[in-house]
Image (cartoon, rainbow, N blue to C red; front, top):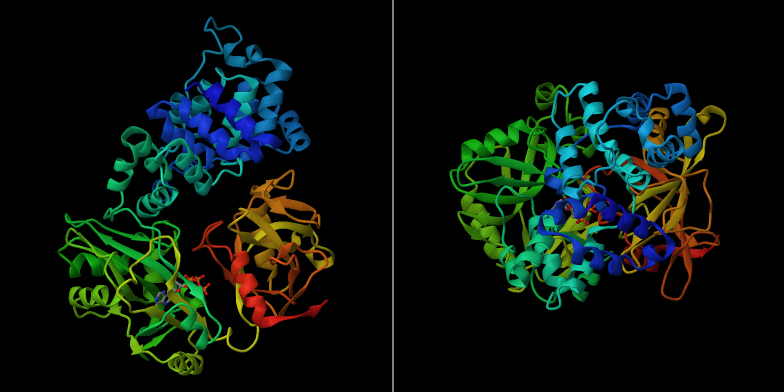
Length: 589
Ligand code: ATP
């Protein structure tokens, strides 16, 4: 597909009717794409350059593109900067510069015989992103690569090319939109099967390419554990009383500690390559060299394990607080923090062993295998379970957990049907947290939708944030509260810097909000928020099926930024809020 045609589709997806008919538009796009275009077309539409676990990082910011545009057009930097401030978006700037001055005035091309505006293919443009992602490129080399592409683009193409360079396409297209489009495209396509293949491969573009080249048979063939590639983790439903577990689990269940750390998926291929993955398919391999070393030493088989890594006090044999774990550096001084913050992994599942997938086996079978596979060692231990058939035990164990400052307990179905369900908030696993059982000091993972400028001491930064939850049915974010407490000055400075990078001019199409903050943001940053109560709301848009609106009262940032979660899956859902509100809702505010 020509890049110009692809941009026409992007333009369509941005306008009102395109937004309403996204699935239909993507479906039409699919029918025109050549096989080699499918991956670039899908990744770009998602604002990415590859699957989450292996995407290219360009590290290009707006500021750099202003310098590039100045060099490429010959327009002084100061002029470019003020035009950028006028448009507020580097794509709009590039588009308008092009129509204003015409491509021919590009300094390099001015006296050149080369014809400009050769039509570029989508794959050719996408190739330039791979070139730009190469490490160690000088700024001049980057500008040259960008210039090579730029000189052949129309105004509309420039708009999307420059937006893509800074990762700001923001079309509102999600993986779920592609799943729906694929199911529609492929007559025999079953949405659930496509979704399952996506959870198993963590790569919707691979699923699409396979569906188009090999049909559903090919898609089904993808549905196995690919050792070395992270699988979407199974997650849990919440309950707020021991009795409530009977709604979901009829027979025996296992009770385990709910360890408060990071979810970790450990992969070792048959030829000994070990990779570690976070819950949102980011690599932990460099961040946890101690775990890596242990896995390398302890196993000689291919294996995929699931567990929670926590900071651990080996002297006193105690799990440490989550905040200590966050001191484990991601990038710099890793070796030092390895010494300062020792960790332990509590393993609770095994998804694959020695060429065999375990996910379709019931939990007790998986645990038996897990126990056999893990040799005696300090750093990786299998979580303890307590078996019971009496819901009162859940309440008792929760009391224990509270006394020992644990976050709560996990309750797992022990029936034969209770398989591992990748990517699902499954009823085979229930989380019962210390706070659900009495008052609403429960926490929510809310996304920053907008913000108001700070006043007084907080002038110059954003001081209050408009926070939202996610509605999976309508695929919409609803506002739930304004949040202003619990932040340190440093938090606000850091958040402001990051938010400025994801600021958007208009309210995104999938935001449901009556209030209008000073700034809107692309949904990206998830904060953990506690609150006193849920109350009726005259202004927020979280509504139950009777149309009653809720808001959080006295919300407070807990200091826990949920970088381990990504939007929209990691955001507290409307269903969860409605369920919790049954227990903690008070009258109108
Ligand atoms: P929360 O925000 O309440 O910490 P969560 O939203 O991170 O929970 P859920 O899937 O809802 O995630 O709860 C399960 C999470 O709890 C898992 O993703 C995992 O990180 C963690 N966890 C801790 N201990 C266990 C355990 N024994 N079994 C399964 N998950 C556990």
